[in-house]
Image (cartoon, rainbow, N blue to C red):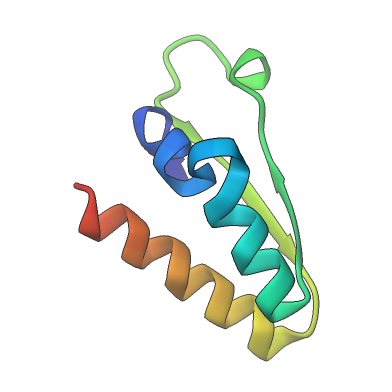
Amino acid sequence: LVPNNMVGLVIGKGGDNILRIQSQLNVQSHIAKESEMKPGETMRSIVLKGEINNVKEARKRIEEIKLRDY
């Protein structure tokens, strides 16, 4: 889960952050659209698919982006 106001940071300009993570680690990601959020929710989900160790590393990198820019 990522705070809604940080999703843009995770995605990066032109998608560069998330595309780099996907490419380097051979994972797929699906980020919930803001329109899919229920009223009052502040978090959006990111679903990662791929080999388990790669998914763990992708999650770690996403967490690092969140912490770096928090």
